[in-house]
Amino acid sequence: MNKVIYLDNAATTPVDRRVLEKMLPFFSEKFANPATKWTSSLSKEVDDYIEEARENIANLLNADVEEIYFTSGGTESDNAAIKGIAWANRDKGSEIISTHIEHEAVLRPLETLARQGFTIKFVPVDSKGFVYPDEVKKLITKHTILISIMHANNEIGSIEAIEEIGKIARENGIYFHTDAVQTVGHVPVDVKAMNIDLLSLSAHKFYGPKGVGALFVRRDTNIAPFMEGGGQERGLRSGTLNSTGIVGLGEAAKIAKAEMAFNEERIRKIRDTLFESIQREIPEVYLNGAEGEKRLSGNLNFVIKGIRSEPLLTTMNERGIVIGGGSACSAGSKEPSHVLRAIAVPDDDLFSGIRMTIGKFNSEDEVMPIVINLKDAVKKLRDLSPFWMKGD
Amino acid sequence: MYPDIVMEHFMHPRNVGKIKNPTSVGEFENEARAKAVFYVVVEDGVVTDIKYQVAGCPFAIAVCSLISEYAKTKRVEELKVFSMDDVKRFFEIPEDKEDCIKLSINAFLNAIIPLT
Image 1 (tube, rainbow over the protein chains, first blue to last red):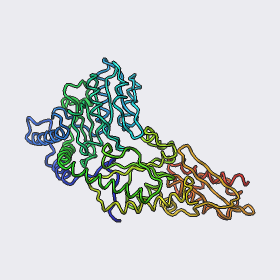
Image 2 (cartoon, one colour; image 1 turned 180 degrees about the vertical axis):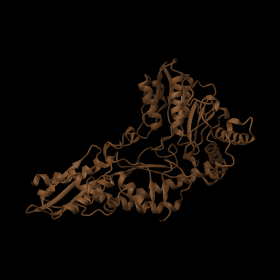
Image 3 (tube, each protein chain N blue to C red; image 1 turned 90 degrees about the vertical axis):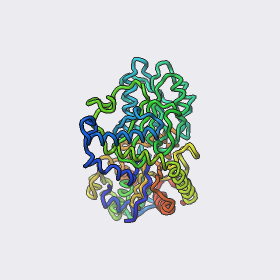
Image 4 (tube, rainbow over the protein chains, first blue to last red; image 1 turned 90 degrees about the horizontal axis):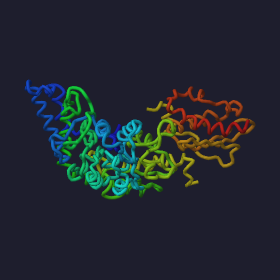
């Protein structure tokens, strides 16, 4: 089989070789539990590496090292931030503001809080997936304790005006959490300039390992512990530290900070060339979300009229091209994308959305084979489709 | 992943298309907006030609293709009781894909049953 072309980098990325090299010794020789650093030199050595990783994350976010808490990834960080703030601040109020385009790792905890008596208010997004900060302001009351709005959307790549939203939250004494899983390592993030109180990130979205992430929590934030036990991570997140993963995360952060600008420009160029070619070769294709600077450089999400995404993804996969997303044909098994619904993609097209996400290991040489195979697969499926009347 | 026979029929679906003057047309669209349409020509109670159009998952497409091969030269009386059990003789049906397969069966039966 030829080399696979991987176009699902928003779902996960391969581990950078340099990250892997850095991690390997921590499986065996540097295995000690960092918690016993005062009595064991083996532990002290591991602890030093963990603190180096923490520093790398802090540098990437312009945070202080004491504000970084290691977690198992984006989902844990989102849960910890949202429930931790809600539970610790219930005496101050019970209203939370968020959006309909958040990741499930934010939406499901919000549903849980709603069942516990919290009120969740959703800010509308426009047809490109953008939240207007003024709309956020309108929903604030004296009972609002938390605003949780993602930095960039995982499906359509819209980058939200979180600096302004953070400013509004700060002015009103409300905590501001952002799910930055799609942006950290790809887009500059500055928690100070952006007025962020809590930020979730995940290593495997930027060439680090799976199962490790971090939550930034601004100093003096009133938050409930998110895992109780031996008191690691200053009592907020107990549990023996995943030193191997953390060292990988730290290395990925260091590499991202140094190479981000170069990578993103290259990725954007590949993405733009790819979509221009798709539009030139395949009729009736339109983009979901925004064009330009306010879209993640690697993200493409488009509708191909007249066909469903699931058979297209399967066909492309058979040809060695891996694409993410897709909706199933049984409503019971998978609903259409809540994000495409929120940006008012017409009902006819909800099952026809395709997401391609480019990463740093993609190359311009892949554009041609992608387009040729896509064109062929689309023609085949349109010939089959009762929804495609052209060519009758 | 998909059973071999599903993949084979999905990648190379048989009898695709429309028939100009069919004896009967049957269609079915489900709540997830997947849709299948069958066109059949019947002479003396026997299916002599059959084609279909389908927008659905690989299972739905493969089952349309399998049905089209199965039905040709068979009697309408025999086909009107076609069901999931008949599909199960070709491959094991995953539980969460039953709706996709029903889509194709229902469209087919909607073309056949009015003829009986």
